[in-house]
Length: 233
Ligand code: C5P
Image 1: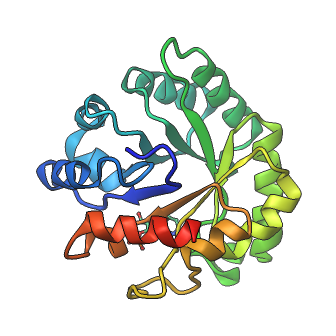
Image 2: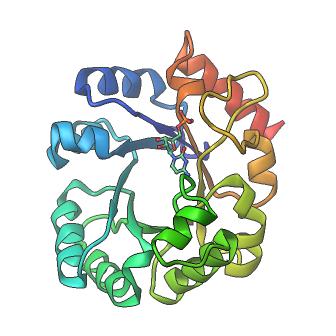
Image 3: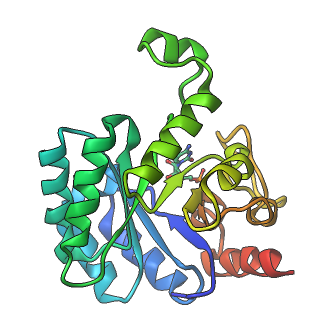
């Protein structure tokens, strides 16, 4: 994989052979691959191993959320796979995030970086009120992102609309992993508030999660090249 590309390509499929074929095509073109619940539920955590054997950095997007002891145990169970990133729900609280960070620190190989999920972008003010949370979603995102930093997480997954504000609030060192990215030449699909790769990097993103504009292209490798060139142009 390209160490210089900020792209983590979202491999949203349960099909391991399709995922491995994409990984082969994208080797050297992207910074890594994101494997989510759809893939992990179908293939188990061991489904991550072939990618690591290929030397591909992996973002395990499993959004852990449970009592501290259980989340710490889940992080420890993932350590032998040496994922580069693991996601945790920040609404699980400070003790849960601290336990996860302590578990990650016990890694004898590469230590995974832990990324916090704040408010899911599928939730609006009405949904938040229904579950008894602050309907001001941007205030809630900021509160949870700060708590994640204080609790020892390495970064946050956030929408492009939140990047500039979170970069200011969290400082330069927290990783901001940003989905909802669309090059001007790609279809928006179901994404509503989008930014181009270059715009998102300019406002402070560290990494970009890009799926369909690359995975659905005639040539995923060429699409990835095109995005990389746009970012540095
Ligand atoms: O294909 P596309 O580029 O839209 O894929 C984006 C990826 O980022 C998907 O895996 C999606 O689940 C994830 N994601 C998102 N928006 C969020 C959080 C995650 O699109 N707010």
